[in-house]
Image 1 (cartoon, rainbow over the protein chains, first blue to last red):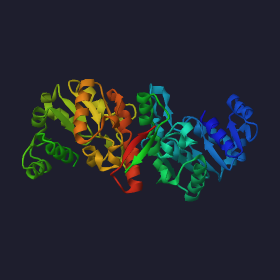
Image 2 (cartoon, helix red, strand yellow):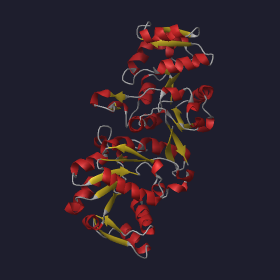
Image 3 (tube, rainbow over the protein chains, first blue to last red):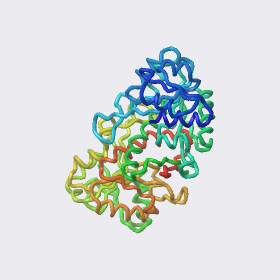
Image 4 (cartoon, helix red, strand yellow):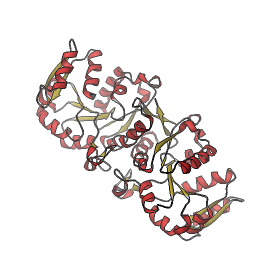
Length: 209
Length: 209
């Protein structure tokens, strides 16, 4: 769903998108292709890694490392925009965070450590996917999107894409290197509870100072 | 520092405050008494538990359970406003969360489980203490304070005190029972990183929807 939402918005903005999957002919990927007149393709993770200039990681956090291994060497040197979270559904509702990927580690860091040839930029993971690609849906777009990653040029390129989605630079808060994913992924436990209390997922956090 | 800030504000509002400590004559507690013309006292944790109608837990998260044990039976039946966080300073900077008190547990829950005769209300723990007691310092007071706890009447009493601090009801988000402290305590990892990136602790999160 997250991949479809982001991919569809990218196509609307004039980009071409390939949705990768394990088999290359995933049912949801084929549906994504079918609903767009042009600009949408489906392929394996390796196909998508080769096709894309920018790669979005929209896999589940517990599958991300395996999916990226399947992408192979085609992904080396590319920017990976990691919007995923290491949710652990095995210990009840709401989900907790996968212990090995939280607190003193994070999914963003784990990807960067495992694939040093990728430039990982963590962003957008603290909100519902509808807001990721259309922040103007609420509060005139004035709420906060965190970004972190080790490479300044990669972050600048991602910020430019975020601007296309409707994010104003004043609402992009660059926290620094990828270790700050420990902070942004830890937003999920409070996000899930605000959602549960308000019954509304179309919200975001804004830094007020 | 948190206890002094909250205690001083309570005295300003006309309340009487006893600051508890292990020895009963803690240097900071005596300084707190000395700087107020009236309304301030110092005592042991047990003295403070007996004196207070409402108890604020401003101890460090790794010491809270021990401090409350020292308070003894005098605390039974009282409302404990828990503003502390289970920070772990043993694994570098910024601190992480104590593993046994995070993710699938929380300090707020641990207090409630260990001391079932206390009514634990978790609130104010997601911001700098200056804002806890004076939300009007930023954004005309329009930012979010989370609250959770098992007892509805206890939460109502705490909300009335928060109103005295300047919190408007529309900015108090009741998340439900004390297990939601897992969410509010998990705000610390992002709080610490926003503080580091902006060099400004006088900020808070606002839910925009």
